[in-house]
Amino acid sequence: MMQFARVVDAYEKIEATTKRLEMTELLVGLLRDTPKEDLDKVVYLTQGRIHPDYEGIELGLAEKMVMRVLAHATGLEDARVMRLWKEKGDLGLVAQEAIGARRQKPLESSPLTVSTVYQHLDAIAREAGEGSQERKIRLLSELLGNATPREAKYVVRMVVGQMRLGVADMTIVDALAATFATKADRARVERAYNVSSDLGEVARVLAPKGIDGLNEIHLKLFRPIRAMLAERLETLEAIFERMGKAALEYKYDGLRVQAHVSPKKIELFSRHLENITVQFPEIVDGLRSAVRDRAVIVEGEAVPVDPNTGEFLPFQEVSRRRGRKTDLDRMSKEFPVTLFTFDCLLRGEEDLMGRPYTERRKALEAILKPTEGIRHSTVRVTDDVKQAESFFDEALQAGCEGLMAKALDSTYDAGARGYQWIKFKKEYSAALSDTIDLVIVGAFAGRGKRAGSYGALLVAAYDEEEDLFRTTCKLGTGFDDETLLALPDRLKAARRDRKPVRVDSRLEADIWFEPTTVLEVRGAELTVSPIHTAAWGAVRPGAGLAIRFPRFTGRWRDDKGPEDATTTKELLEMYRLQLKQTKKGSVALA
Ligand code: ATP
Image (cartoon, rainbow, N blue to C red):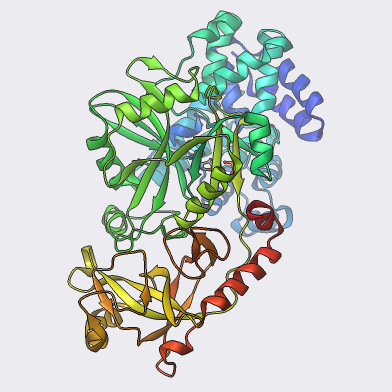
């Protein structure tokens, strides 16, 4: 039986050092002293948790509640405990002092073992439902009743979810390798961690079976793996120099999702391995019909899409979907996300992580039939800088942040950041500081909540030289319900059956308008676009300028005639100014 006091000894020394090597040695000493059956528990406690992240079993008791327990367990007055808390700012230190000064010592107390501490903490974390508060309080009081002051410090830090040891997961990996194998085997230990996302599991296998035992740790359905990460380079030339011919994918600006799919169950995990299944019912539904009945693990980026314009929305619209089920359902209808899948790690029984990118991509396309809400990432294989540049422009126009280049022969390296994937983004400057006045030239029929009205407007800038109105974006955001309902009436007189001669558009609107009405728009920035015709060919042949994330400010510019709207020449000047402001952007687009 391992005494908790031994663990606390090590923790105090670890806390006192800032050197990673010293920390590792202290940990190795601790792991060597730990009996096999307690090893996983010691590893979890050192991580400041009691289960791997993805199980979502959290401690995190409210500080107020812990203070009440402390007062109760020590016989100190609430006010004194509160004073200590204000003084020290660390509830662990408060516990240490309070337990040291306690009035009533428990009649019977036995030294805490690792196993007792772990079981109590586990029980506290799992308590739920009616009366659970009281039971948590009782469990914690019991634990503190038997704790020495030093032990109390760590018990309390654990329950409030603030261990403060400063031990990184990778330091634990180092220590496990050094304890049960050699330093040279570190990579294998890390691999086992990256695939299982569970250091306790790694310890459970290592201790009895040694390093070769780790071969049995495989990709497993419903246990997330640590995400493969990308390096960054500043130019497309540099990317091709490194990779040669590469797969370029749109880099979507959303939330990374790892989807585990079986015919019976679907679970979604975030980049941080949290289970986010309930937050995205539309992805779960989509996958159910997109995946042909087999077990798969796929990865993708979830992006909110305006159902009316089909355009991407800033991710803040759904970034932390929380709350009750009815709210989640409503949000998933109002701003549904589309999942753009880009990788496939498991197909049936087959682990694809060690296969080259091209093969995984093929597998992805074979097992997943795109639907409206589940699509494949847009990809182009090339080694030509010019082609890559126009693909980059298309990506920005589509509402993406840039490109992700992937080496064609690269395996999926879980948890690793390397040059097998390279991100190439444009850094955005602050929002376009000026508002822009644009002319309504068309509209698209509304869907969903906007059925019967317009879903989005097609708006244009004025080309003085040619006396034409050239489109620059679809506008669907910033209208309240009332304004929206009134739109058809407001625009009735300007309505035309076909595109008016002074309108230059590559898009086919559902309804056309004679350019008459001007409104004020704010956007995030200007991008090069093959779809919109404003300043056509001025920046790049075959492309115009578009506004990213346009929003109606609410202000109708009835004081302006259509020829008083922002001109395409002004848009071009704004674009050039924006390039100067964002050095990186100018490198990217130069
Ligand atoms: P990182 O994830 O590399 O630590 P970060 O969180 O700041 O950095 P980014 O720099 O934006 O993210 O780039 C990486 C992320 O881009 C990925 O984690 C993923 O969520 C997202 N992404 C979007 N499109 C793709 C794609 N086609 N392939 C891979 N990742 C993509």
